[in-house]
Amino acid sequence: MFDQITIIGCGLIGSSIFKGLKKKSSIKKIITFDNNKSVMEVVKKYNLSDEMFSSPAEAVKNSDLVLICTPSSSFSSVIKEIKGNLKNGSILTDTLSVKKGQKPKLEDINWIPSHPVAGTEKSGPLAGQENLFENRWTIITPGKNAKESDIKKVSLFWEKLGSKVKIMSAVEHDKILSITSHLPHVVAYNIVKTVMGYDEKIQNDIIRYSAGGLRDFTRIAASDPTMWRDIFIDNSDLIIQAIDKFSKNLDEFKKVISDKNSKKLLEIFSKSKELRKSIIKAGQETDKPDFGRK
Amino acid sequence: MFDQITIIGCGLIGSSIFKGLKKKSSIKKIITFDNNKSVMEVVKKYNLSDEMFSSPAEAVKNSDLVLICTPSSSFSSVIKEIKGNLKNGSILTDTLSVKKGQKPKLEDINWIPSHPVAGTEKSGPLAGQENLFENRWTIITPGKNAKESDIKKVSLFWEKLGSKVKIMSAVEHDKILSITSHLPHVVAYNIVKTVMGYDEKIQNDIIRYSAGGLRDFTRIAASDPTMWRDIFIDNSDLIIQAIDKFSKNLDEFKKVISDKNSKKLLEIFSKSKELRKSIIKAGQETDKPDFGRK
Image (cartoon, rainbow over all chains, first blue to last red):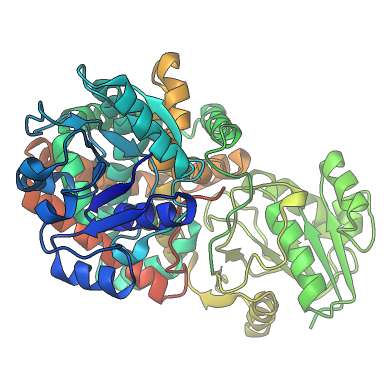
């Protein structure tokens, strides 16, 4: 498929791709590059690149596929640095969580944007998991001028890593993710913020008894700050729409609690179980009980 | 410690206590009773009781400790049924998640309320886990007239199951739990409700890409509906206070997103990681990355 590929940005996603490809593909050379020197030291120490380069421009020059796995705020500067050095006919892809936003013009480049919907709350080059993408979806959002053959190649690339692939428009992608991912993160951050706003006196108790629900929110809210800052900026309009819907529902829910409306409460809670059943049926979660890891 | 104990209500908590005691204690006879006949069939089939009885009054009569593990809404009727049959000097405890509320007068009974802060999203007699309480906290909220020796016995009972024990007032308990457990559940239910409010057309996509955050909320929102209805009714005033704090923060957060305030966003996200670190340090969660169970 590809003889040589370059991964720019070696965080959770970049290092997971490297490890996954090493395990599952026969790609001859996989180059990893990161602008952060301390990350590059880790890359070297743990053999997360087949060759070491000192600039992104050098790192991409002979590659058939270049993946940009940096946060969105670094995307434009990376493009600027590598643009002139891309191999003729090579494909560029990325793993950004928002597909619209302030992207540079990429007319001369075969750019096939992709977004693997997978992750953990960990970040950095040591967070990589070779099976991170297995049974997860990768969404590809090709532009109007994308070549069918390039889309096919990028699809096969993700499938090689165990991912299922879906093609849709950038607009559709950003809308869906604002609901399934960005809103849950808003809420998780906000619950952590709320809890941290209580007196210091009560903080120890909050931590001690966090197994009653809070603990799981703190996991979601522990994701990479830079990545999430960029997502909230890039997709702010759709995220605000989702927050408005959530707030409206919360006001209604508050009234139900305030009224001690037993019937309505039971109805809300019973319905909630249905969505989970669908998610389990779709293979995006197991039915195994989770009683907190120890 | 106790020669015979009776567990009334054989859901997740009741069956976990039975299994835990069988594994870890030397209590001679453990009786399980549930008012639901289909639950009693499961109890019989899976040997979740050392003896079978046809009424709670019969089930408690020779026991040194009686645990009521039903939802709060069944508590009063259970008390009414067993009150006349309790053995002289026996201790009564419960596992309710809210400690104030409409409880019957229990002056003649040695009642030591307790709340094991542990659970999974599963319910019913087959959901029991013998190690559910290990390394979790149980909060004991004794009344003014409780005997020190009874408090001691109930503490030792939970410690036998692997739990750590903390004694506090009912008022303090309900306040802390409204923050660490009830508010997170409000928010989880509300996010699921919000997501289910979108067009049917988009529902399949929401399920498919739920691994980006939503999935984890649906787990919390899949807990037992009856139990949670009762909690929301019993602790409604403190839950509403917590919701108000959350809503105020959400409005502020929305403004930060709307302003695309990069510095402030990064600050919020970086701070969120700190609470999680404290929770891990307190042994209420591991630092292992969670990339979704498959």
